[in-house]
Length: 52
Image (tube, rainbow, N blue to C red; front, top):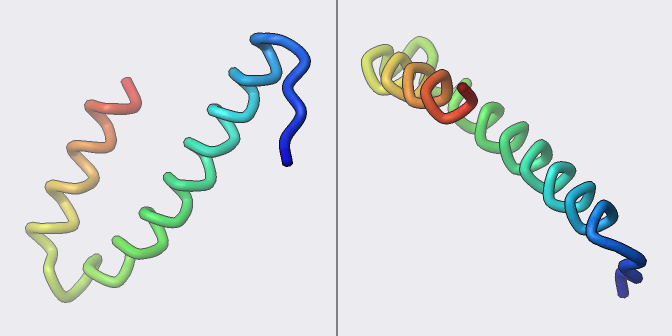
């Protein structure tokens, strides 16, 4: 169970979760780097837009 003391704790948990999810998806997408180049490039472009 996660104990939350204030809003900044919640924000920290959300940021950590987003970071971990991004890392997992990035590792998964690396599989397509050479086999599905167009798909991988579109993913990279969408990441750039979302992260901006």
